[in-house]
Amino acid sequence: MTVNDMYTFMNETNWEAFVPLYFFLISISAGSLMISSLSTVFGMKQYDSIVRPAAFTSLISLALAPLFLIIDLGQPLRFLYVINPFNFNVQSPMSWGGWLLILYGITLVLFAKRFITGSSQSQSVAETAATASGNNKILSSIVFVLALLLSAYPGFELGVIKAKALWNTQLLPIYFITTSLLAGLGILLLVTQFTGKKELSDKFISSVKTLTLSLIAISLVWIISRSLILTTSGLESQFAAQTLWKSGWFVGGELILGLLAPLALLIFGNVSKNRPVLTLVAVLLLIGAFSMRYSIVFAGLAAVLP
Image (cartoon, rainbow, N blue to C red):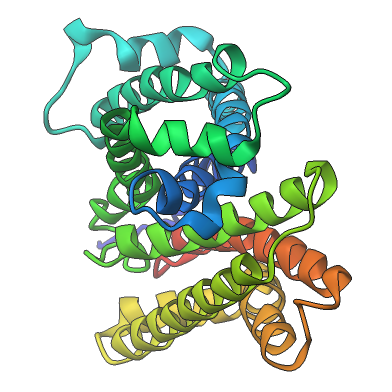
């Protein structure tokens, strides 16, 4: 007598929305710092006005990010375990990420410190930025490199998981960098418009427009190429592509609101003379960056053949 037992395995996860929120906040921190580095590291003077806001924005978002990770872990001691040097595992992306977060935080505090203690009310934003790009260019370059690595880190952490077809690609870190830059642009446009003492210059707006259009184009190319590769790479990859394209966070949040809508507004709207349009673009970029992280996390988890 032969007995055949049948089992049903459910692919479930204990991850909550705190994980994409954590990814989103570190992306805002790293992205806004990288955008401000166009002035402090690369000498593009039209970005001088955002250096100071970027320093504080990066610092605040970085301070908030670990809170969501600790909440998701449920036990704060688990976070301390990750950053304990005696528990460092060279093969663990989480170990590398924990220490990258600490090193970036230390250099970011040093970077932002001069804007708290080194500038008086009589000192202009341009003078402060000139000091940052001159006397502190080495520190600015170090924090830029760390911000670049931090923005790519979620892509490395997810990309090494071979069991998830949607995540397992060497290009995922690059896409995280691209969308982090978009998130940085979005938050800085909002902060500078609502807190800045002076109007944003036309040269700055023109440069931001070109940069944003380029990053949106890169993002769209990544989405198209990744989708084509997945749909021609076996059943599991095809299922991953189908799961992603069925996600409302991806189609509605990331693709339509986060990429196509800002693309249309920047091409057909006069952002230099119509600043509310620029504000709307900034909000949409932030929606898109968060939606990307939400969809890539949860669509990736769900995209497993039964």
